[in-house]
Length: 292
Image (cartoon, rainbow, N blue to C red; front, side, top):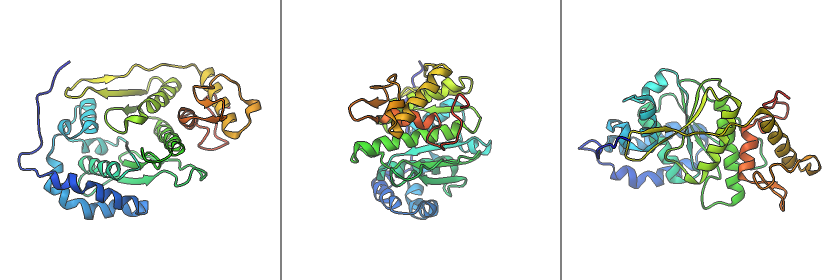
């Protein structure tokens, strides 16, 4: 493992204003319609980003997310990812700081005018129809996950995990190679995200991988994942779908405790995510992994 010597930002940068104001700016963003966020952020965050000389930082120094991207691609300028038509998705927690961090990250990658950046929030109410994210080559999508907030209820967290599953499946359905970077971010969802990625890896191991970057090094590490056979994935989808519908008489007991609770007879956070990533929550008539 190769250690990286201590490095800092540009010598004349002044990031304190950016750091101190990020929460207030992020809080304002949470109250805006999605369609207004990008233009609003460009206007209101420009001065702080310029003072911090955001664009002049090295990606290996700025944060865990940019360090992982740079180590995985060996690029010094991450804007090249969009120029070569890669598709980037940044997941943002439902917090002031989380949304601000995601938008500053988008500015660092795409440029101060947020060219080719899309901002979208997951569904506002658990009972509403899930939003199927639409990701396009050459764009960076900031996806705010409503409910991904330690101050909100456990049910809100379950819905947020389900929406991570929707995002993973939408990225998988592009048909390209899929990399899931697990460095940085909201650590409470790490196990859920890795487990959902394992299901996608099981469906197509040739084009799915998960990566982690050891802090303070350039050592990008592919994470070894379990592979489940097609019958296992189909059985999981059918059982969890039956539990979600309340058709417990149709549900087997294979995944009780793992993905749903026997006492409440409801899916837990893992089950919500598994069902989303296996395709059930996209549309009732969508074929499952086994083509049924």
